[in-house]
Structure formats: C-alpha cells, structure tokens
Image 1 (tube, rainbow, N blue to C red):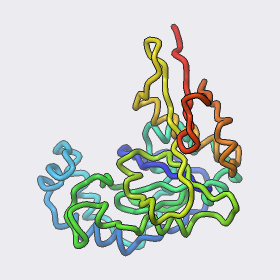
Image 2 (cartoon, rainbow, N blue to C red):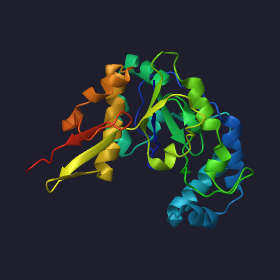
Image 3 (cartoon, rainbow, N blue to C red):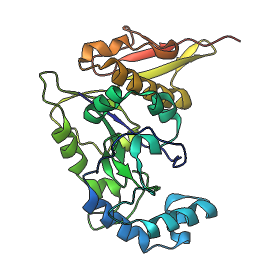
Image 4 (cartoon, rainbow, N blue to C red):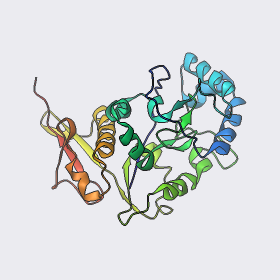
Length: 259
C-alpha cells in the first residue's frame, strides 16, 4: 500500500525538527534540469509564469540561483517537515513517533513539480514550482510532459511487496494528474470528504485538504495496510458513509458543528 499527497506552497524551514536521519531523493538529474531552466528566467518571467507577487517572484528567483547539489545540511530539510499548509496541518508530522516515521518512509509519498516523488525524510531545498505550471522544457510545454511516466514508474517501484497492492490517492487533482493510471498496475482508491453546511454535505476545499492530511496521519499511526480498513477512519468527527461510497471512492461525512 502507498499513500500519495500533494506538497504545499507554504514552507517551514525554521521550526526545530525531530532527530531523524535524512534520506536522498531519487530524481536529482531531473530536478537539476528544471532548475537550469528556471535559472535562466528573470524575476519578471517567474512572476508571469507562476502568477506571483513581486516579493515572491524575487524570493524564488533567489532560491533557484542558490539551488545546487549536493544539498547542504543547514539549507535542506526533510520534506515532511518542510511543507506547511492545510494537508500538513492535518498530517501533523511532529506528532509521529520514530516507528510512525519508519512506516511513513515505506508507505507515504509526496508528489512534487520539482522533485517528482519524495519520501518523508528525503532532503529538499525550498522552492516554488507547482505541478500545473506551464514551464516549457525539452519534453514539452508543461511539467506533465516533463515528468511523463517517471513518477508513475517510481511509485510502482516503491510499492511494497504484498498481495493487497493499492494506492490511496490523497493528492489534489493537479498533482495526481501526473500519475499515469495505465502505467501503475494496482488499484487506486480516492477517498472523498464532505462537510455539512446549511444542512447539505459538500466538499469544502479547506476542510477537505486538512482531512487528506488527517487520513494520512491516521493510516500511518494505525499502520493500515488493508484497503477494507480505510472505512474505519474517524478522526475529528468524520465517519464513513456506505450509501454514498463506491469501492474506489469511499465517502466520509462530517456534520456541521452548531455553535
């Protein structure tokens, strides 16, 4: 079983990290190609390409200029502790024990526009490059063309040997689009999270993102490896709704809190 999640735009390189041994990611050559491409761009180019403010464009221009292999320990950070956002608020990596982190190393993957596929302890430098960015490259007009089947092949390679081989998709549509379903040869399960508002259940982006992180945390801490156990997820008021669910899209509801 593998779980995939998206990265976050917001990063945290200041909070003290737990004492884990960092690992090296596997797409160094590909990342270097993308960085070489980005280093040729001016802050104004980056601003237009990524629709950023002047300050963010300048910041990322500096990040690309400083990016180099091998990563220095003082500038790099384990990926699961580097991202900060709704998904990672739910995941709460700082609450994971050493045993949990070991399980996550085997079963959790972060999809990335720059790094391709990251294990939780893989070192990374700060960056901004969303998967949907239309960055022209030698393979085509965008990052989907650049990565081609490489991300899918890597996930296939990382899938633990087991009779029950499946992938839990807790990534956004933008990132999961980089996974080619005809390349991976295991079942894909995509949980859906609905929150009640004004008496109706709907997907509310902020809550759904955090719920993906919560389910990731729950899978890691509960050491889930069987797909039938996914329906037991019940953190922060969510519960499985059999009637709305299908085998590949289990649905979890949470009732509105009346204050």
